[in-house]
Length: 482
Image 1 (cartoon, rainbow, N blue to C red):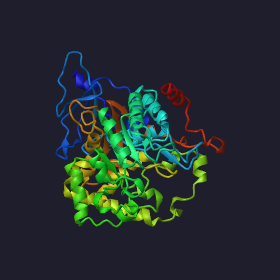
Image 2 (image 1 turned 180 degrees about the horizontal axis):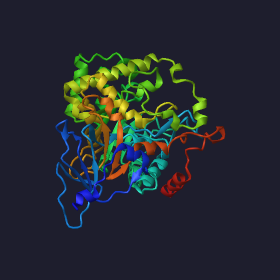
Image 3 (image 1 turned 60 degrees about the vertical axis):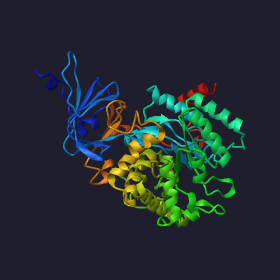
Image 4 (image 1 turned 90 degrees about the vertical axis):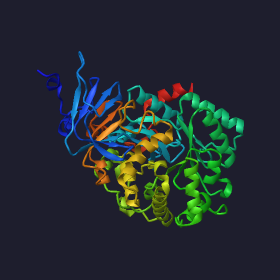
C-alpha cells in the first residue's frame, strides 16, 4: 500500500473538537490543500505543500519526497481553508483591570490569558511593559518548558518612566545597570512610558548595546514628556498609539491636540516622513480607546468570551452598554483611524504593526482583540492584506525576530493558524479558527478555550488580591529573583 495512503490523516474541524487540545505530532508534518498567505506578494497562494520538520518550515510549495523510513502526518485542507502566519502581537498585555490586587488596580494574568491568545492564532506576544516583570519572565519559562501552554512570550520587563510605580529620576549609570540586569535575566526588549528625553536616550543606548529594541508611549514634550521626533533622534525603534511629532504643541497634552489632527497638513506629512526616513515602526493600537468609551463596530462576540471569567467576576460587572461615552477617547479612536490610513497611504505600510493594548475589564480579552484590531485597520481604510502583514511580518521585524517569525517561509518557526474563508475578501474571516500550530505542534482552538472557561478572575472577594499568583508561577519567579 502506498505510504501516503497508509498514514493519511484528514484534520477536519469536527475531529479537532473531539480531540485533545494538542496533538502529538510525528516529525515531519505535511500540510496539503487550501491556500496560504504570502506576506511578500501579499496574495493568497494555492498550497502545493508545506512540509514541517523539527518545528520549522522545511519546504514550502512542494510535496514531500519519499525517504527511507520517512512517514508524514498529513493535514489535508479544503479549498475554502487558508493558512495564515501566526499573529505577532507586539503590544499584548496579559493585564486584567478591576479584579483587585495588593498594590495596583491592574494585574498581569499569564496562565489563562496565554491559552486565549494561542486559541486565536496569536503565537508570539510582547507585552510592552508589565507591573510584575518577574512573573512575566516566569511565565516565559513555564511556556518555553512546556509546563504551560501559550504563545511564545517575548518578555518586556518593567516600564522605564513614570508608568513604573517605583520610578525615580534615575541617572545614566542606574539606567544602564537596570538594563543590564533585566537583559541578563532574559528580557527581550523594553518599553518607555512617561520617560523624559534623557531617560529614553540612556535606555535606548544601553538596550541597543544588548541588541534589544525599545518601544515608546510618548507625549508632546509637555511637562517633561518626550515628543516622537526627539525619541526618534535618540534612536527609539517604534512608537505606540500616535505618531505625534511636528503636529503636537509642547505646551499642551498630546491627546487633545492629536484628536484634531489634520492629515493633509505639512506638519503631519513631515512627521510621517520622519518615521519613514528613520525606519521607525508605528503601532497604532486603534482599538485601545474603545475600552474606555462606548462600543464601536467590530466589538461583537463570535465566541462567548464572558464565559471564560469566573461567576464571581461576571456578577460584579454592569452591562457593557451602560458604560458612558468619553469625548477624549472617541476623538482619539477616530484620530487613530485616519492617521493610520494616512500613514499607510504615504508609504508607511511596511512600518505598521499590530498591537492590541487591551487590558480586560471583564468583557473582552486581548487574544480575540487581535482580530478586532485587524478588522479596525480595514475599517480605517487599509487593504486586508496590509492588516494581515501588519500582524505578522511587520511586527516580527519590529521585534527584531523576522528571521524566525512572521511568514510561512522555509527556515522559520512553524507558527500558523488555519481559517475558513478568505480574509482578503472579508478580514473577519480571520475569526473562523480551525486549528493553530506553534513550532509544528497542532492545537484545537475550541479545546484551548474550554480549558479557560470560568477560570479568569477570583472566585470570591477573599481571593481578589491573590487569584493570579499561581503557585508554579510564584515559585519560578522566586527562583529568577535569586
